[in-house]
Amino acid sequence: MALNPARFLQDLHRLRSFGASGVGKGVVRPAFTAVDIASRQWLASRMQEAGLEVHFDPVGNLFGLNGPKSLLIGSHSDSQPEGGWLDGALGVIAGLEIARASKEDGGPAISVVNFQDEEGRFGILTGSDVWTGQISLAEADALTDTDGLTLGAARARMSGRAREFLPHDMFSGFIEMHIEQGPGMDVSGDQIGVVSDIVGIRETRIRICGRQNHAGTTPMALRQDAFQALSDFNQRINARFGAVATKATVWTLGHAELSPNASSVVPGQARFTLQWRDGDLARLAAMESIVEDVAKDIAQERGVEVEVGPVGGIDPAAMDDRLKAALQQAAHDLAPSKWRDLPSGALHDAANVARVMPTAMLFVPSIGGISHAFDEDTKEEDLIKGLEVLNRAALSL
Ligand code: HGY
Ligand code: MN
Ligand code: MN
Image 1 (cartoon, rainbow, N blue to C red):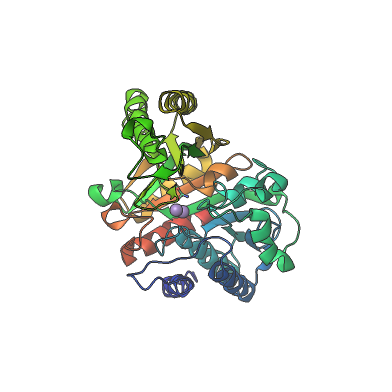
Image 2 (cartoon, protein in one colour):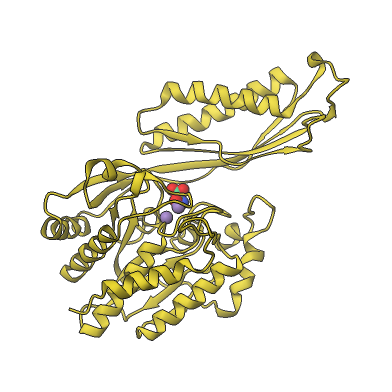
């Protein structure tokens, strides 16, 4: 069998060199930046060398195709603004190695995918969202990053290579390998996780407009301070989300900007993002109602305007029983008593792809449970174990 772990690790490190941060093994490779596009061109050349047919679709998803009814393996290679070297990259390079080895060996037809903007610079899992028809290309084009750049303008940078969207029925199923990104397996000592289901998410951008004014002369009682309103908003959300949350429910205010952001000016405007995640659709909806209620209360009580933007999201998704069983069997064979089933609290393209074809996921541990940070890492032996389990499952299908 031609599966080549050394070649897999070498390609993984080569991919890291596109946008290597200089801090640990971190990367800075957000979707459609120059280094992201360069890394996709390099990946396309690796696919071509492996005998796969390179195909970029209009939203920047990159496929390495190997005939009709192939099994699709992959993930994404874009990163967070400060990201780790494995988040997404691992699944793409594992797919490349397995497809390449299978081609060399005359094994089953395996294709590779590298989705675009999984990390949601513009939307949420944007490349797979568009490919699977959850949102239209026109809707996606109007999405903006936090600096106001539209996805339409960003994807024009890759339009020279874009061809049509591929039909889903040319693939028999999809498997995504990923780092766990949380502490579960690092603590339990397991080497492989077989994902049962992926949580759902809702996310929105909120703008609070108060009154910009002089920080020395404006009496406290007369202020319409956008930051104080933001702070109050956050505290009320913590209390009210806390009242409906389970242990698995999470929420994050992750991006915030004040205007004019100066020490002697009462802030006139605050813009921030709010996202919440849970496995239960009804709870996600209840939390959305809480956001609307809190926005109204803050506006009324503080004399500010609170605009809640459109709420985007991905629904919870269950993984396919047959593909899951193949991963469980392979994990049982290659990592006996060192694997387990577990849910995913992070989002993955697999949640979108599960709507259009049988889909499964496997995890390898994250050291210290750290991810979306420069010091994200996984032991080399765990990376290779994941590759071998995925390969064995793929061949068994
Ligand atoms: O945010 C997520 O869960 C994913 O890494 N984009
Ligand atoms: Mn990822
Ligand atoms: Mn990520």
